[in-house]
Image (cartoon, rainbow, N blue to C red):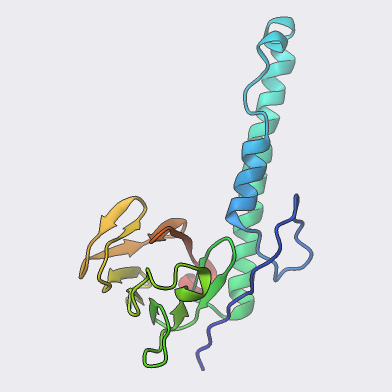
Length: 190
């Protein structure tokens, strides 16, 4: 049985902490944490004590790596717990992909889609049938634009009837909507 689970919009907070294994930190929240970090050593500190400054900079790098690893682990656990092959998520929604082929678009009375992007705002800008994400027999994912307007996949324009391979961490942009694609690595190993 295939299901699509949509996580409702969460309220923005200054800092969000992961309280359970089902919570997936939003990419934008992790990005904001990283951007708030002081990545450059202070010039005055550099002149006063170069060695201390060098260690502070290295610790910052390690912190960023740990944050990235934590996000990846949490995302993989959430996909595994939902039995998902992949995940397409934005700041406000998570779409667990449990079928080998899903239709993205804007649901209407006469058009059924697996992933309803119309709920995320900009409802009239997204085609009813915008794109198809399909998994091949070898476990590779592809996205095909079947909508009227172009879309971006990792800053590469994808016109109508064009396809591109999707890898983990790929950014899919549709009419101002930004979605991150993740593959369930443990599922692919099986």
